[in-house]
Image (cartoon, rainbow, N blue to C red):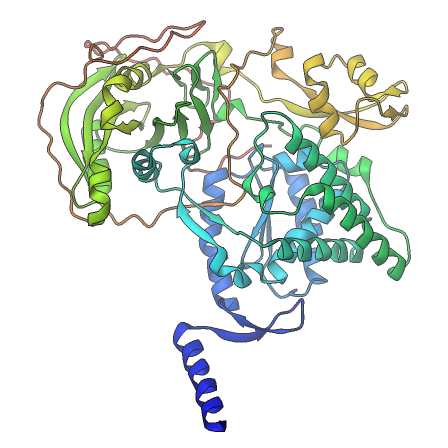
Length: 581
């Protein structure tokens, strides 16, 4: 019996050593746990992911806000359970309400969540929660629950498995690290958020109050909530639990705790709110990019998702998607060849062409036979990809349309409608768009929040949105002299009603960060670049209705020198970091 127990222990030791497991003391719980990830691996993982996160979302640069986040972050890190980690705190240029951390001490806040905080105490609670994920080693403890996969922004909308499979590499293999923390981990981080924010002098009750904002956001019709919210406990339950923890902690520690509402609100005065049009926007069934001065039509009713790296479109039926990418190449044909080699495509037909006077290269391709494992090849062969490579203003733009072969005849003209509609953006009214911004004002006369907002000329259809970002209800009383947020809407400055097509915008950024794929570009490629005629828009399918205020220019065969207007915004090559004051 003793020999058997010794043999079993020896087998466990051998197994752990073979698989790389180790036993370590968790710094938060103080208990010994089997660790799947060493601290060295955590640090390496953070250093690897951070550049990709920054490239995917871009940084929102505001010296005052960044200095505040650095100061509070380092102050809290010093009193945490792992003060020795090389913490970094960054603001991402995204309108989505999100905050997250990756192993190694990297903590990220979007400008979207900063716009919804109403005091420093709310910020401090969420900061403590995210630091808690790092100090409690949740990424290591739930390593087997992590999903590291290639997922495009619109991939979740695509019903066809074959299209989804092909759309992922066409979307540059964007990867999301879903840190699927268990509800126990989230509750533990809530507890640490209360502990850490209290330790640095903030009233943790306001961390609980922020959960009301999250709950209201979830309940708003048509609002997309990041995936990280669905893996967290219900905000309503967290409201009660965090209030109870804050009450107990403050009773134990004693003293007074800061909120700092006015100080925080003054810091976010002028913060960009919502989508930044200089990164591109959809209006009247067109995608406009003022910074890079181009436009193209979007099929009516298609869902869209915009990021610094790419622009994606998907039809409501989930049968097809299109993606716009940008990069550099010597010629359009060279860009096509490189793309085919990387994606291992077999070209059916291809030829040089022009798109509104711009040099271009068009092709139709299918996946090569060596792209996937044998069991996936038949599925991949059912896909057809129409691509246009367009040279403009020093960049190479790629538009790819993906659908099943059976649906291609019905969708080809829709793809061509967008791709052949790519053109130079010259309209100053489209180029000179400004982002909406938070404006902090001092209330002149007491009244309900609704009456106060009306006194500042806020639109009636924005009242619910404005009450949400203020963390109040419209019938709440507001005292004279108190600070509230209003929004400087660009459409009001232009003197026209807001005009964003219904069901044509999508803010579907994932709560977790994106990472580049490990695509093997050395795999075999099977291409056939014969010069059969490029796809013709006279073949089967339906042409979507033309835009309400614009009509796409037809493809021309006589090259014309493009006019390169000078935009007022900042040009941004997808994948680079956008700087902003």
